[in-house]
Every structure is written in structure tokens, then in C-alpha cells.
Image (cartoon, rainbow, N blue to C red; front, side, top):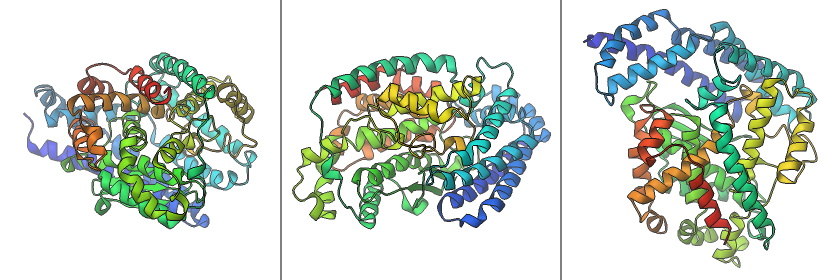
Length: 499
């Protein structure tokens, strides 16, 4: 058995990698919230430096030697032992990191920051030409990254696995095909029925009042403002700097009540996951969500399964009416509920309803694969985007601002590996909630009373505190008793929207 000195040294080295990553996250958070435009060039340089330093420590040969020394000890321990989990996850991360040269990591981090700054200017101006060349470089960088993993089944698999460990193009495509078929069928049923009026949530709703109400809601859900904060940004996200500092960002549309509220709850769902991890895992690779899809399962579970339920609004609607008495005085609860659950094909993914949302995601997933495979060029991406939106959703954006420029992902990260997590999250979230209901059948009754601890406590025990001790596949099987399965999501949507 190795001495505690070896384990302490491992924890120290891993904490340094974690702290450098957190420092990069702080700079990114600042860049997307309060940084002046003039700071973009230097911020790219700063992020590149931190990326290089983090990569150097993550791939230090001495870390590899230390892990080699510790692995026999880990293998002698029970599968659920904390030391074994720490060593095995650290080994997996190390094996991946050493495949990627430090020079590449620095170059990629600098380009991502530069391209993000270009996107921030280009989108409001509907100027795809301004980001065309940087995006071509981003595609080249994405392919270069995948090239470090030559034995992958598909070119995109390394990017997908980095975000959703164990997932591949071959695994994802049939699941998505089943889901897409069911969603198209359901959308056809809805389109042939009487359309819902969302007029009640289209009025003037002052931003400060929206923020006050939303913060009250997420505090009730369990978001700890002593360990977090909420700030405005162009493209909302959650970020973790430490167990005691998990922040969210959001955005507000003064003429549409649904945007700020549900975006805030969505990001708070991510934050509940991170705030619910074990404090003693902080600074280690165990302290955080196990995958992009599992993380998204939490944001979508709280946003849709909880916050778009009739039980949720039976409690909160009187308080919302009190916050907006002029706008909602004559709006009945059922009218409001129908408005926030309106199903209609739209242009913007983040504003999409529960039924069409995954069609947005799967469209992007296939575009990414076409780009990586060379079937589609960056120059032809805007027109391909419009064509597929017309084919899949029956709508077409009047410009690129609400077309290929609407999502930040390809302008702030690699092309590939990001979007599949959103739909995987919807699938996993439905599976997890069904499991929670089996264990605690009165969850919805408690939600109707404004009590979220039965659900929050179940998630902390079964998901949050596990961190990365289990792979996504293992965690899904542990909690639900089966593998990834789109049927619970389809069944939930069918029951909600076909009546």
C-alpha cells in the first residue's frame, strides 16, 4: 500500500490543474459578462497562457509516474472506494491529455477567445463574413484535435467522448433517429389541433421585476446565493470556479416573460448539480458533473419537468401575478400554463418548446458531422442551415443572425462534441425523473406545495454527490435499472401534449 505521501502528492497536483482551469473560467466569465470590448486581444493571450500552463501540469510525466505507482493500490480496493475512483478518473484524464500537444492546446485556446470576440460583434450586425475565416480555422483545429485519436470509429468520436464519455456517433444516431421519428409524429398531431395563444406572456415585463421573481424561484429550488450569483450575458451559461463559487448567467427579454424565467431556472439546474457535489471532492477530478448529457439532464429536468408543470404554477402563479399585477391581472392560471407550454416550430433553439427543441439540436449535430467529414464547407454552412430548418421545422430565418450565428458554441469551442449533450440530457432527465417518482411518488404533490427538497434530496443522493465516480452509462444503469432510452421522454411528451 502506498504511503499517504503519494496520495497527498496526487491530490496536490490535481488541485493545481483544477485551479488553473478555474482561473481560465474566471477570465471567460468576465469576458462574457463585464469585460470592456477593448480587452479582447489581451484576454485571448491570457487564456492561451493559462491553457498552456494547465495542459503542462495535466501532462507532466511525473504525474504519469505517480499514477503508475498508485494504480496497483487502486486495483486492490473495492470498486466503490474513494481512493480507487480518484486514481482511476485521474488516470483516464491523464491518458487523454497526453495525446494532445501543449502547443496545440495553447493555440486552440487563443483562437477560441479571438473567434468568440469576433462573434460578439458579428451576430448583432448579421455579418457571417466577419467570422467565416476564423470559423474555417476552428474547423481545422477540430479536425486536428480528432487526429490525435486515430483509432476512433468516427472522426467526431473524440470530441463527443470528451464531453459525453462512452458516447459515439454509432451509439447516438439510432437513439436520435428513434426520438426524431416520435417527435415529428407528435408535432404533426399538435399542428393539426387548435393552436395555443401565448399572448399572456407577451407584454412589457420590467427586467428588474423579472430578475427579482426568478431569483426568488431558484432560491426556493435550492440554489445557494452564498455560493453563487446571477449576471446578464449574451449567451447564458453556468460556470464553476470552486465548490463555494458556482455562478450562473442569464438574459432578459422585456417583451416576453418566458425567456428570462426559464433560462434562469435552466442555468440554476446546472448549478444545483455543481453545488450538490461533495465539498471534499473540490479540486479533484471527482468534483463535478460526470458528462455534458448528465449535466443537461439536470437543467432540463428543473426547467421543463418541474417548472413547466401545473403543480409548479399552482403554487407560484399567485406570486407571479403579484409581481406583475397590470400585465397578469386578467390572465387565468390555465391560460398562463398553456402559454408557457405552447408548441410551435421556431427559429431559436434556446427559445424552443419541449417538442421541437431536440429537432434543433439534432439538426446541429448532423451539420457538425457533415463539416467534420468534409461534406459541407464553412462557406456553404449558412445556406445549408436555412435549407435544413425549412425541411425539419418548416421555418427559415430571414438572416444569419437568427440562423448560423445564433449559437455561440462553434465560435467559442471546437466544432463537434457539444450539441449532442443537449438532447442526451433531455433523454436522461426523463429517465431520472421517472426513477425519482418510483422512489418518491409524492414529488409532484410536494412541488404543488412549493417544497422541492424531496426531489432535490433524491438528486443529491443519486446524482450530485456521485460526481465523476461513475461513468454516464454506469450512473444511468445504477439509477434507472437500464441503459440510455428515449422512450420515457417520448412517453412524457406524448402524455403532456397529445391531450
